[in-house]
Length: 212
Image 1 (tube, one colour):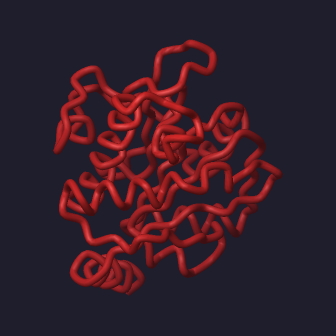
Image 2 (tube, one colour):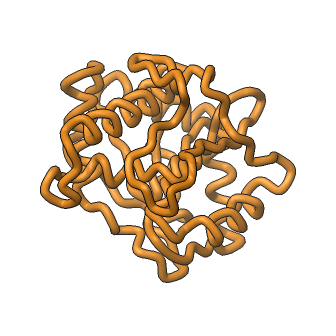
């Protein structure tokens, strides 16, 4: 019954008015770090790939039943992330029922979020997503995989995922900082080609969710 309810919610969202959400997590990390990123991504997707997402994103907590209303939930920040047992259960139910969680390391999040992902899916490995995966192929081509937006430690950018029955349910992007690239131009003073690259990759992620 829960899967039918979630499916109905997602169909309603894609038919009438889609909405995406930012995850407000506990632990002390700045979940609110990039306030302009999701609104800018929404605007870009509505203009370029035909989505009909509400201009302002929602904010949702890991334990809230409202999370089942959003086909895409985004998390970012620089510091600690902690999911309680009840939050783990709710998030797992959300993801196994058709939801999608994108965690974008805003720098300094990695050592904390890896532990929480393991708690979330102890029997499903977090694996690097190959460059030939559909999320990198359309509507924009990224033949080398996830693009590099900000340098941070100078490591290569990586995209990791958790798959349930061959469906990507959790995307963890590391050493790329897509959400910084989605922010207003004057926040980081990124060149237009860098911001466009980040937004196009974001559009690929939402396209994958709404069409798979």
